[in-house]
Image (tube, chains in turn green, brown):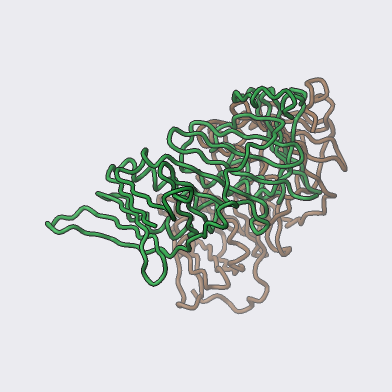
Length: 286
Length: 277
């Protein structure tokens, strides 16, 4: 197994930093999957996470100037899966704000590590290099099955969220009123966030939101095709999990698509040129 | 939550609308030191009262002219409400760039306070439970009993409060026709310190002290009034013969209208000895 990658362009470094920052705000432990073409950050669906799961993939060619990956073997197992504490990666990359280059490689110190080497600008002729060794654990190929790309859920409603900043501010206020929030929407572009407790009931409504085009392979039995367009699909979720997703966003996505599976789950899909990120929040049992 | 139609609006006991919710939120924040507030609504506007330990009371006055629409069916309405929740709802959009319009409706005893807030096409409806209003304290502070009165620019009081020694349990206020005309003194772990404002300072706009009076107040009770001083442009300090303190803060809102926030505080009873200045 070998992995070495290098970024030299400062914009790409910032871009990569933003992705890592967003990921580290969403989860503690993260799995990284490396293939020839892509880099993935994954949190599989586990009871320990409260059912929340995340899948983020980026095309390595859009970020790295040099990229070499040799997986477990050259055939079907030409990939590497690692487990890392996201915050450690985030902290390591913080030094790269003004870097001349950023290198990441898989090394073996006393334990397997992801070594981050950052070359900083220096007034003298010798380069200034900051090195971080982040311990990782290698995930054996027998367990790779747990890290498959989630299927697009059978949602009832799909719409584009209003500006994230606005939604985040509202959810921050609603979090102080209740631990649970009901998120709902319909196929006509209406979207609502609601909390209800003994002391207060508050609902924020948006309308005329964009509906992303999605044709589930011409499947006329898809739940979204059978759902009445003006009917609101809703899901009652933990407000903290929603806020974690909203507060962490540094990627500045082109669009954020929200898919609602009535009474079951909410699925967010961030669309951006180089990255796609999916975040899945299940409903809370009443 | 049903959005009320225009005709149904007219039936509410209290119905007020404001184009910029910050003109209300701003003033309420100046009395937000406990989670419960009593709201009094009359044809002249709203008074929101917050109390603590039966020793301190903050009153925020939002007169009817601050609202773009204000109608009240009965002579007076009063209810108690959770101020934390009210402020969270009023702040739901909280943008500093655009303004949030707010409509407030209340239909009398036992009904919730209904708020509708709108900004940039997004609408929030809130229904907040109201409670039976408990009697608020009457400090029996009248203009006739005022012994000493000083009106000063809020800046100098702000400075004094912000520099105050927080380890002191009491704040001692001296107001006197003789120097030092106005003195704030603290007795903390680091020692005694005082902040004087002479009557001829250009921060002082009005000075009328008939007797030399020194009183002590619990500093942690008076602390919430700093919220009001921080927003105010002018403060009027008055003390009566019982040593009761009245602080009236003149606050300008974003439309340039003036609103008042008044704090009353009773003196610390444990203080018996004469003051050492």
